[in-house]
Structure formats: structure tokens, C-alpha cells
Image 1: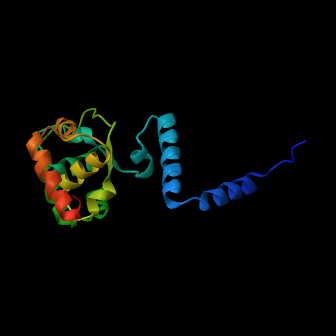
Image 2: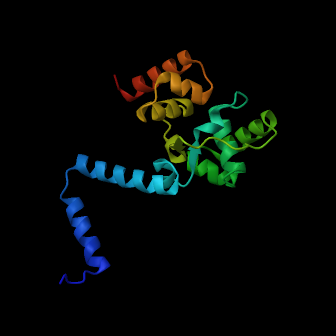
Image 3: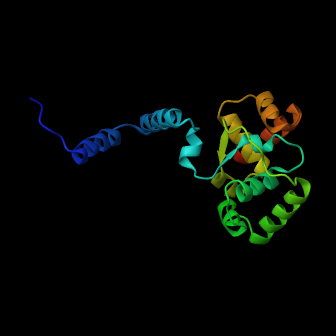
Length: 175
């Protein structure tokens, strides 16, 4: 007969096993677990990790810049206050206020249903080493999308995607 194991000791055993893995193996395990939970929840792994994940579907319009689309989405769909958006995106409050004002003038209607099969963590935009568009393109490329697929998702020309990606790689020191 098998002795009963408490949930606490089972968790400790799993953590101990996880700790004994190499970094690469740990990343693989976490990635697999996130993918499994995301599939069960019908969400993307990034949406599980970042509460304010930005769906790529908001960029599939030509009226707004990338930052305008993000601010409008976070304000109108996620219901964040402009000061919260400023903090989340690592921008000055006056910049976000101005950006939202411009976005509201350019696109009067709120975002209707947007494709959320690919999302980018909002917190990634706070890193100012790359522009907003460079972050978006670099992130999508690291997910394995081709330049053409990214161009379709963002409603931009393939050559624009190549230029933005080339600039981002140069800034990051990636070949």
C-alpha cells in the first residue's frame, strides 16, 4: 500500500527536481507548462504571464501609430487610467495623455473584436532601448514569424518590417 503524500511535500519534491535541472531544461519545462495551461485556457502563453498583454490585432489598422494603438487599447478595452498606462509603459503621463488624445481624434470608434492569437507583453514596451515598433517586430520575429507574416499582421510593407527588424537587431547587437 502506497503511503499518502501531502500536497506540500509533493510540491517540495517537484521544486527539488526542478532545481536540479540545467537552466536550459528549466526553461523548457516552464515553456511546456505555460503552453499546456495556455491551451487549456485558450489563451496565448504571453497572456498568462502578463496581465496586460497587447494583441497584435490592434495594429491591423492604418489610422494609429503603434503607441497610439497600445494606449487606446489599454485605456478603452483594459480600462486602465492614463497614469497607470504611463507607469506600465515607462512613459511620462503627459506623453500618454497627449497620445490618447491624438488616438481618440484619429479613431473615434473603440476597438471592435481584435485577433488575440498573438500578443506582446505590455511591460516589454517600457524598455526604451528599442522603439515601440522595433519591440513589436523583434518580438514577433523571435516567436518564429517570417517578415511577410509580420507585415500582414501589422498591415505594413515587407520592406518596412525588414528595415525595422534590421535596426532592432543592430541596436541589440544581433547578427
